[in-house]
Length: 140
Length: 140
DNA sequence: TTAATACCTAAACCTTACTTTAGGTCAAGG
DNA sequence: CCTTGACCTAAAGTAAGGTTTAGGTATTAA
Image (cartoon, rainbow over all chains, first blue to last red):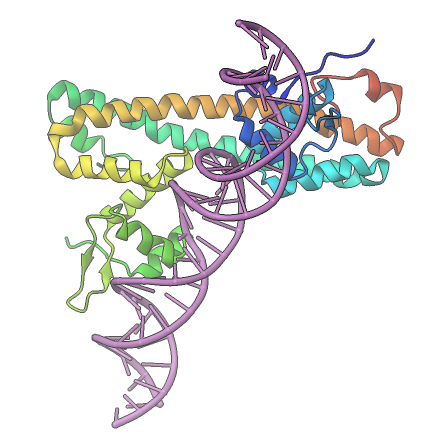
């Protein structure tokens, strides 16, 4: 059961990442499993795609490229780095939860502003008592 | 009832932002209300602090400095820009909700990895059936 | 056989958001 | 008076994360 493989162009389309970005990741050690044809062309396997998915996940939580590379190096080193990887994910979990909490706080203020400007739009001005008095954390 | 005012150093401490960053924001038009002493020293009022708070909020949701400046320009232009400001906050709301959703998706994978590595740590290896078979979206 | 595509590399370039540096002002305390 | 600390500016520098460019290779369709 030999798996299906993909070209960099197919991967770029599938993941909606520029080709140049994928090359950049590869160059920076984020895709150590990639094979090449005799003509030096990259061949992506399912495993590379899973890895790309994990990279996207970690990037999304604000992890830097160099730290993602460190993690991937640990993976290729095998069982001796399980502890570090565990700690890394615990830390990532904590950070991600904090980010979600911070975004939810920001969203509250934004929701308030949406209401504020909806009323202002209705009135044609922000100079009405309803808005002046509703004076929450912010003005403007 | 003249309000209390603050020096840049006090603001930096209160908001835990470097002084250089506050100056950078000011230079880039994010703090158009700031007054100065005769000796050219910045004086921060409550209103400047509220504005800083709003800047932090927008920045937190991924808005760029130049777009925050545009918003602040709209604010100083008065009622003629209510519509734009309303649209901006609706857009910000949408984006922020998407970011939260994306982070929650990432968090699911991270939670899975925490469990995965907790078990691996316990077993001393990732080479156990329990982990091989739990084969969720990702490996590594 | 040639021309279009899709791929390759190295290196230069770019943007964003700051930070650092160099040189100067100003008010208060000793 | 003079020094210390907090402030000021303009301009150069930095880090991260790509993107673009220039020049070249390999496969395929006409």
